[in-house]
Image (cartoon, rainbow, N blue to C red):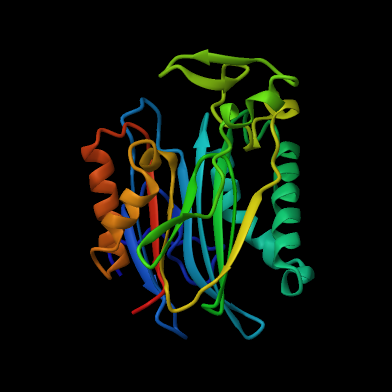
Length: 283
């Protein structure tokens, strides 16, 4: 493996952890699926606030690929909590094996309640999340809150598997609930002039205006499904879905693909933290 992150005792096989580690890769023990991840701190004057998960786990005779990016704001306490607890809350639910979507939704809400109940230990910050669970290399479940994004490549065409929860995307609804201010930086619509997403974990002082229930998509992995990209908004602010797919499809090495995506985002002057995971389904 290439420059793996520090050991995380939560997981039996480590390739997930603090996003300040630069890059790593891994593969399935039962099929051709491989992944690579790479991460970089942005130019903002605060510590790196992203965490990630990228690993395969075996449970009840099944192989599960677990992939996630948690993009924090106002500190790294909440994304760190998510990295330790969200997948655990999903997989310990017995209903996961009969209704994965319901288990994922319940776990998102349960984890958010746990974050709020740990206040003030976790501070007043929050985090977005995009998660992907690959079951036996055949079924993919993607869930998200916030503006980190999942994009699937099928026959070279980009398919967005998540929804960007930006305030302006549901402006007609949320203006009846709270004030939207177009404030600096960048004249971006913000919840109460503070937060540029309409769903997030944590953010206790804004919670009456935010949702923590995820949007979900599921897809069967077939012979035409090539790879999945998970990335924080530091990448998507400067790159379209199709542009990202076109870059990643140039190499079959998912780690190299993730590095090339990050290099292009930096070349386009992305100033935010960038976290990127590429999961390639075919050899």
